Amino acid sequence: MKKYIFYLIAFLAISCEDVLDKKNLGAIDDSYVWSDPNMIELNVNSFYVNWMPAGLFKQSALIQNGIISDEARSGYNGRAVNIINGVRFGADRTDVPFQNWYYGGIRKANEFLQNIEERYILPANATQAQKEQRDRFIGEVRFYRAHLYWEMIKVYGGVPIITKVIDKDETDESLLYPKRNTTDESFTFVIKELKEAADLLPITYSGDNWGRITKGAALAYCARIQLYKASPMFNPSNERKYWKDAYDTYKDVIELDIYDLHPTFSEIWKEKGENNKEIIWFKDYKKGTITHGWDAGNMMRSQAVGDATANCPVQELVDAFPMKDGTPYVKSNPETNPYDYRDPRLRETVVWNGDTYGPRNEKVYTFVSESTDPNSPMYNFDGIDSHQSATSTGYYMRKMKDESLDGTKGDYGYGKGSYTQWVELRYAEVLLGLAEAANEIGETEEGVEQLKLIRDRAGILPGENKRYGIPENISIDDFRTLVQNERYIELAFEDKRYWDLRRWKLAHLKLNNQLTAMEIRKKINGKEVSYTYKRRVQRHDKTNKPVFLEKFYFLPLPKEELLRNPNLEQNEEWK
Image (cartoon, rainbow, N blue to C red):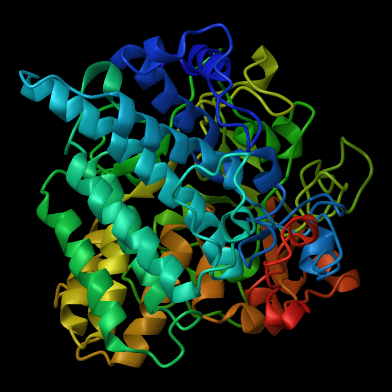
């Protein structure tokens, strides 16, 4: 896992690039590749290089998934505006968001699985270690094949399920031009793949293998997909069976007894290695070698190096964080300081007016700059709307950033310098998923217990009844709303919110609203300084009203794929 570039170069030498070209092994002898476990492992490693999720740490996602949901807006007007306002959604467009067609990677997975089955035959006296290694290879590749299918299913619904290598000389048109499987068939395939992959994978790794796909990762990912299957987007009749399936798989993950919540919320993305028991599936980065631009892209102007304010948290997200005692935040009228006595996760997620940030604990102010004179006490370089690269919401990003990085020393800039890990799956998501599924099958108090664990780690006060602000005898409907809000704040900017709103069929309700900012003004009375707080529509939403139509839940299949395959049928809403 530490040799990504080497793995990629090695695999490119032995992999096929043409989807219909069965063999293209270049200078490396074919029989050698499939008889040497080290070469086979290089093949497996290529799936990590090519298909490991990096979420919002990717540049394309950096300007999309955070700011097309109700988590943030960019300081820059051009970023993702045509997604927010619906312009880029169209059956004839080639730039529709998330319009990925992963059959090149699926082809490589099918080739691998066919070759290892037919050509990597262990001797009768093979050791247990050899058998486990072979099983691991198969389990890892089946996991990634399921992952690629899922990335399409959650966007399109049912897709063609192809599990064999289709030769370029194939004459059977049903294989050359496959039809779409139903959505239910597609779900069944992916869930079965992940369950069977889990049986082939070890529970833990150590040393150089740390970070590979485990049994727990396969089960937790399977449970996430089952939660989607149970949700209103895919389960409009709310059949309880699907919630029970997700519940059971989440319980399987917990019963492995190897995961736990990290004691410090802000350290989840910084602490690397086996001591961090919260992370389940992640992409690592290395200081000075493999880095990303999360810090640079989300820096306030005063500490920026070339880039800044890609994701400015919106007021709706700030309001979602409860009070320190776990009770919902209630706006005061008039508002004074809305950040006192709040859920500690709020400060770990956003930087607000007067807060400190960075290696020198510099004060960051977001009040409106009412002077152009840098020497005036009413001037504010970082102030809301003071410049297109300043905050557009009154807030800056803190989550998943490394405050030890110093831009004056060249630590970051223009898409590089950050080496916090992207955590695609963590134990808190498992607990939240279990809480949601338990509630839907009538086990609401079991769900409450999961939220109590998360709120306890967050630093919310337990209260005399030890319920962390969760009401006694809470109803199924009220607890559903509470879980949805808890996911909003706990998993903010982890590339979950946009997809949650889709699976809950709430996107057309939440994402058609203009989001708000906090307009802060400074007042000086002698030696006393105070601030006034007023909510207003975020500046970009004033001119670009958000649009999410019902038809956006299932997006159009890529036009070029429909032209290639006459048996593919477009989603009904896009015909």
